[in-house]
Amino acid sequence: MQASPQQRAADHRPYFFLSYAHTPRDGAGGPDPDMWVERLFRDLCGHVLAMTDLPAGAPPGFIDREIRSGEGWSERLGEVLSTCRVFVPLFSPRYFASEMCGKEWYAFAQRVIYQQAKSNNPSDAIVPALWVPVPPQQLPGPAERLQFNHRDFGDRYVTDGLYGLIKLRIFAEEYERAVYELAKRIVSVADTAAVGPGRPLDYRQVPSAFGVNGGPRPMQVTVAAPTRHDLPEGRTPHYYGGTAQDWNPYHPDSVRPLAYVARDLVRSLNYQADIMSFDDVAVPHDGKQAPTRPEILLVDRWALHDEEQRERLAAFDAEHRPWVSVVVPWNREDQQSRAAETELGEQLERTMPRKMGQGRAACRAAAKGVPSMEAFGQILPQVVEAAAQQYLRHAAVYPPAGGSHTERPRLRGPMAAEYATTHYIPETHDLAPDAEDTDDRTS
Image (cartoon, rainbow, N blue to C red; front, side, top):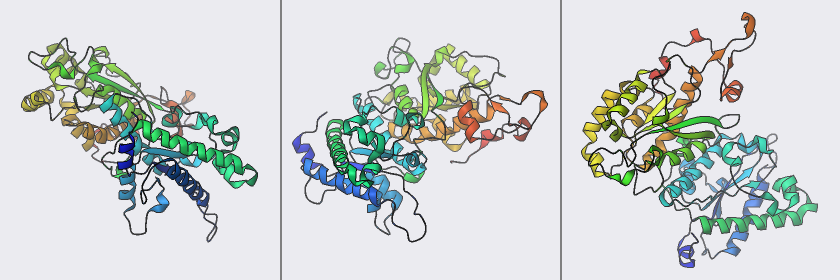
């Protein structure tokens, strides 16, 4: 939705946050290698000021070089990332290897996801810029999914990036054009996306949007919830749709089904997420079957009123599936759920006792109940990471043929390539039985 002139005049938030990877100095006392990034930032600020009606003193942009000595670094970053209108990542190989840059990306991306959940209007307020060109196959999932045509800024920009243009005088005109076009795009996206401010995140606890090395990893989002056609007697239909995947427990704060919000949040962590109904899950199956992917199971406690669903959830819980993390969303504004909270909670404890007590503190908290969309977004990354780690511990490994132990065992399945480059696969006897299922660490 286009912001009105009155709204723009009253909005003094920075138009953009410039996210970049810090380049280490080449020896003690050498020149500042990031001075060229600062020049780009100043040039962008000048154009944005000229293109907008920002009043005197209102910052057109933000770069972390502006954080003053003695100022809380993580607090300041969290504050600006919760208010800036557009996120501008400077693509480079170093950028996608930086955990700090990945944290900045995720902190902003989750704001966009929440806005879409509240309005159901798709918007993307991330405007990427090429500092050093990066081959498409090296882009993590969140960057690869951006719909952005860099050629609008010039062919030389695409081949050399802003760093090449700014360093070579013969490309001065190409640099000026690229920066001008980038500034125009920032202003246009800021006005059309109109991403509202959010609550500052604890930057130290924010996950990275780039995950680990390798391509997007698979993750299953499964929903156990009634449809509007099979609700318990007297249950309001406002939170339900034609399928389990349409369940929207945070109505009216959110107008999107929770499964799709969860999918977008999982994708922003560099996973490839699929959604399915618990009705389509084969239960029970051979408990010795190796997992194919980690899973997040979203459970509506009202589903326990259905005897068949309750039996299927109990059978699911009886199997040893530590790579499946249970999240139980409920809405503190839902009067029916609040009135029945004790009864529904006790019923879930009886039905799924293993899942209710499994895993880290964050996983147990998620299984006890997540009362708001904001709390859901805060806890989901921790639950996703726990499920992924448990999957990697329990997925089948295959020693080399012939009994030789000169090579590491191999993991098969969708996550094999990613896992092989980032983890050591221990022999079976290296892990104490179920020791990992009681890990209370929050990292």
